[in-house]
Every structure is written in structure tokens, then in C-alpha cells.
Image 1 (cartoon, one colour):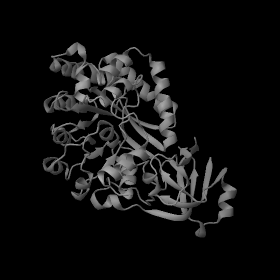
Image 2 (tube, helix red, strand yellow):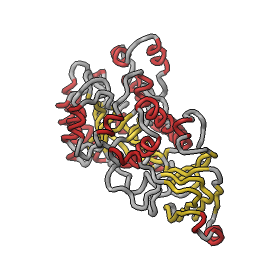
Image 3 (cartoon, helix red, strand yellow):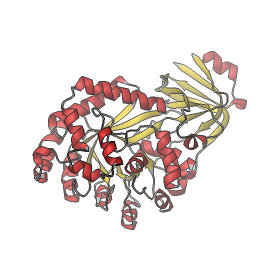
Image 4 (cartoon, rainbow, N blue to C red):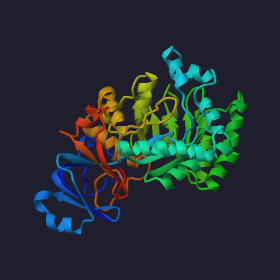
Length: 417
């Protein structure tokens, strides 16, 4: 199929050559655009683009199977959401009420809520029912403009249920137009059956879960919640060494609630990303400098849990790359709208619109290893883009954070919404 989008008011994040590394420091503030232009899509790929004044419009229209007139509208590369827990069962609004009454995340967890609540719900949900719920969320985030998503396990905490989650994530990849990367997060919490025996659970993850997940090819990454009251640096090392042995690159839930050492152990083991980072200081900045590990910020969870936000401005000043992801999950961020995450990046972390757009597109693509095919408007990349409604500027997207502004969604070169 050949698809022509003409009269585009502004084409966003146009890069003739895709960056070979994530955008760092001042690079994050550079957002290449083209005004009054066209975008040609052929066989699922971005074929060409340029200004309306320099194109043979009649020829382009004659060759196209479909033409979209984007007068007054903008075209963005689809968001790359590199941290989600999209596969889960049910909801946790009762804990929302506990939170309003003043209970902390840790207190709710100690009462049997939190992650362990989702574990029980998931255990009692069939794979097909779980997929039906996940598919609904996938359709939701597609409508928001997301084209690629990382999905973690971690609400199973048994081999059978972790496998069930990852199989559902693979079905989302196969049966929806989303590009999906999968992460094994068996070390999300210590299950009730191992209460007081965390080391034995870590041994089960290493000896049984990781080999079984690898045998089915279900996970691209291995992750751990490295945090006080959950898992330690030493636990992380054991799990990362096992995961790497089976071809899974590490990711880390790091420094969400304390200076946990998660950043340093992530860098030590070549983690693709370290995520959360509300507690980040000079030691973490120094560890990240010069590494291939991407700091990934999850402002939706910080907002929902009413915590202090990660020091994004300081990270950028230190020359670090920054990605933004949604952390869509039932307990700390029941929201997958990347436009809202960008708004929080601007309002709460003092990032500029250009920075949050880059963090949610090209740097998000790097944080899930799809940067060679997604994340920017580049010839030869997969045509994952969305057309906005009529908007005055690209700054209007994070500014108007609750207004639906996506008009047309194109994934893999096909109109899907």
C-alpha cells in the first residue's frame, strides 16, 4: 500500500539519518521539523518526505492508494513506551481509597495489597481472559499515539503464571499492530509462599524460571525491583548473571523509594535502562556518565504516588540521555497516555517540549532497542506515525494534556485508527 499525507503543517522529529546513540544533554532540546510538507509511505515504510513546494504533487497523488490531507495538522513519530505492566488482571481502586486515607505504598503492600493483590487476581484469571483485558489496553494506548511498547511480567511470581503473562504479551505483539518487547520481572515482589525466605525465591528464579522463560523465547530483557523491602543489589547480580547467560539484557526498577544501589548495579551489568530514579544523586550521575544505560523516568507513577519527581533537569545538565515512559500498571500508574507523561515532564521535571518529545520517541526507542526502525521520521524506518487534529504548535500537545489530539493513527504503514 502507498499512502500519501499532504499539506502537513509541521512534520516532527525528522532525521535524515537515525541517531546511532540516544540523545544526551543539549541534544535532547533539538527537535528537527519541516513545515508545509508531505510524507510518503510505501510497503509499510517511510519512503520520502519534503516540502510541498518542492514535490510533484500530481505525480505523488497518482501513485498513492490513499491520500490524507493534513491541512493545519502535524505528524509525529509514534510514541515508544519503554516501561509498562500492560498485562494484568482486574484493578486496584480500593487501594486508591486507602491511599487517599493516608496509607503509603509500602503500608498498603504490608497489608497484602499492592503487587501481591495483582498476583492473586492474575492467578485466578485464564490466559484468554487476561489477553482480552490486555488487548483492550493495547487498543487504548494505540489511540493515544503509542506504536511500540515494552511489557513486563511480574504479577505471576510462579513459573506457570509468569509464563502465562509473557505468552499474553507475545499475543499482543502478534495480534495487534503494536511493536512489543517483553521483559521477565519475576523479581517484582517476594510471593507469600516465600515470606521470610527471599533468598530461596531468588534461587527459584535463577534455577527454574529464567531457563523456562528462555526455552520458550518469551523475554527480551530481565528486570528486578531493586529496592529496600523488595530485592537487593546482591539479588540483582544473581538474577542478571542468570538472565545474561540466556540472552536477556538487564533492566532495573531502580531508586524509586530510596538510594538502593539499583543504578550502579544496572550500569555494572550493562542494563539497557534504569527506570524510576526519583532518588538520584551525584553517585548515580557519575555511574551513568559514559555508560550505555538509559535513565528512564516514569512521571505518571511519581504523580500518582505523590512523591518527589526525578531530577530530570540535572540529568540533562550532566549530559545524560533521558527517556520517558508511562509505567502503565494497576497500582501506581493506571494510565498509558504518553501525552500526559510529557505534560508531567514539562510541569514537574522542568523539561522543555522538545526534550519530552525526544524522550518519548527516539530515546524511548533506544530504551527498548527498536531505534533502528522506530522513533523518528527517517527514510526506511517503519511507518509508525500519528496525525494530530488541527493544533497551533507542537508545544500544544503537552500544554493541552487532557484534550484528545490524535486524529489518525498509522502503524506499520496501515491506518488503524
